[in-house]
Amino acid sequence: MQDLQRTDYVFVNNIRFVAMISIIAVHAHFLTYHEDLSFLPSLVLLQAFKFGTICFFMISGFLLGGQLLSRPPGEYLRRRVNSTFAPWLFWATLFIVLLTFKDAALGRLTLAEIGKNLIDTLFFTNFWFVPNFLLALTMLLLLRRWFERPWLGAALLGLTLFYSANIYLRWLPTEHTTALLGFVFYLWLGVQASRHAGPLIAAVRRLPWPLLIVTVGATWALALFEGLQVRAHSAPDVLNTLRLSNQLFSLAVFAALLKFDCPLWPRWMDVRRHTFGLFLSHWLVLTVCIDLLTVVGGQLTGVGRAEFAANPGSYIQHPATRLALWAAMFVVVYGVSFVLTRFLARSALWSWTVGAGATSRASGEQRLPGTHTQTSGGHD
Image 1 (cartoon, rainbow, N blue to C red):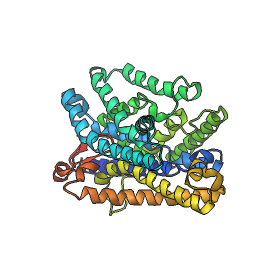
Image 2 (cartoon, rainbow, N blue to C red):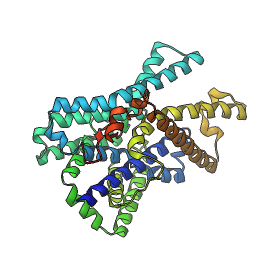
Image 3 (tube, helix red, strand yellow):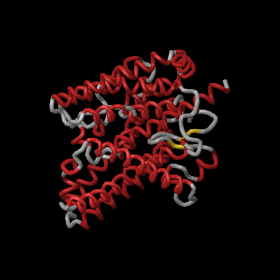
Image 4 (cartoon, rainbow, N blue to C red):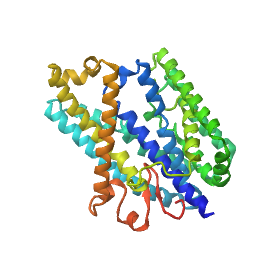
């Protein structure tokens, strides 16, 4: 039993580590993202990183486990809000303040622009995740008396598939970040996986690696093909996370990561302590890096910052240059975000901003993006 618990802890941190890399990698391509959606090699690489969001909802549900059903719902929700909302609010507010100062410096600060910044921050940056998670958690708590009923899982899956169809039919905005109920199913599925963790982990680890590798490769190819079909239909969100094929790809990657029983993260990184801070801080770091790059790019091309920022793909035309810029941006954003998170986590005054407050340090707890506190002895 001790070995199983130790392996579970490794598997959880493996998913935290790899999923966070995938999320930052996709975001690091932000500058020329839309231009490169028409460039197949970039599309191939971007699709390979599109598993992080669903994996995080799954692992969040897994860590919630049976406590979701055994504790009073009001108390349980209050604890989750306290552990995630304050750090989220700090970074979201800091990001909006940054945008406000930027607008003021550019002479475009208006109430309408401030309102637009608020909407964009909530729905079109990484800050969408925590409110979406808390909404999903609230929904599961309200429905928990029917948690074991098969129809609940079917209904939640139906909601997810509705958003998958919406990518093509466009009844609602298509971005997965606006899919308010699109990820409840995966939170529920993670809780179910936790409740049957022993048999599930044993079954996955009996699967041969060639089968898992082929499954990951096949679902990746299927997701890439569907992305091309979405583009052919002129749908705006070519690599939408909730494409049905991408959901299958994400589940395949989750299973492959579950099979690993050895750490995938470097020894100098405390994955449990730093993941939430990486998640919260990296978008602000990315925004600063892009702003600096547009200033430099505008000067080097002689077109000015505004023109370069509006049409970066017109001035960074060679695909190899774009790929190199993407890789460099990832290294810088991940590295700076990690150093910043590590510094804040060590501060008695500021550790709460990255989910590493005094309480969690004393008890060995750590927050997963948008989820919970976990103790070293089991699942909270």
